[in-house]
Image (cartoon, rainbow, N blue to C red; front, side, top):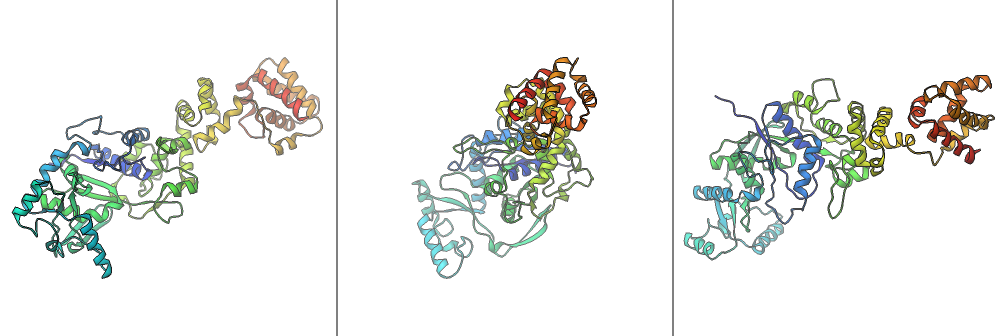
Length: 500
């Protein structure tokens, strides 16, 4: 038997910015597809027009692109099984719902919201939960309890109605999930879900089954929140007589405390975003990009939330993740989002990233960086990136290379305010004029110290405070070579005039 080509899909709704949980789902689909030489499909599930947010679809595409998750088929890309927006596939849904109605696996229901609300209230009085299924469907207003002519008359005059699935009675549904294994569900606990809403649009349960079948999806890899729907979806496949795909429900990403799903609020409380890139809407939100996280750092970290490679290596590029990824090794337990682990991971990726790319990301975080000489900025990033956990850290680590210190660290100034400081500052100014170049400046200054019985340590600390504003910073010789003797002299002169 010929093995089917692997096809997976990521199917977000354009109802707002893409959460990192969604990015993780897209990533696992992408890794699995590429590991198996398959296709990664993006499908936009936009049937709920009331909740659709302008710009959300573009944001999803931009986020995936920034993360390095390339789409094989999807909106604006095309493919053999399009269109890839559900709102453009209504003809297909209409055809398939007719198939279920004809086979008796679905039926029309004309119950009004008020009538259903009354039913719920009656159940609440009895301490029961209202379910629309075999227990009461013949007592309600639908094509199972009504005469065929009456149903046809109501439909012909445009009576508001939905189409419901006819869930079976007294059936044990056996399901299998790659992550969670085998389960058995009693069909009596499943209600007759709405497949087509009163406005004629399909529900998620119906549309995603139809789309996955017609797009030849072999593996449905999605979030844990859809696990309770697995039995219903399997019943729908059986009702159509279609071969079902394999399912894998990914574990939740939890907030740092481990109590509850990671949300925008819990992220804000812990001091980090939960979106990949900046969202620009009625209310704008910063993303991990603006926070200073590299796409490779975010992707590497998200891959470890629910899965751990057998290899000992922790710092992996997306090409390496593809080679190592095993869907069968994904665990079912939720994973806490650990900001410090993400920053450690990001630090390692900063070291492995070309300085030019780091400059591009730095300019996203700081508009001021855009006005600086690009070649010099690339050089500066190369000098300081060893110490950076985020791209934003780079700015604080390098800005003294471009700007004279405005404030001076009090503790650092206290350490150099000793007898001979004024003499050292004067010597710095003199050496700036007489030195034959930046390369020999430090050695000439040390030689002057030996002649004047002043320790090299005291001289170097004084010079560092003058140039940096504190006792931090990269190698002094590198700082002097970068800023030039003219700027060294200016900074020494300013410090001499304001701090002595």
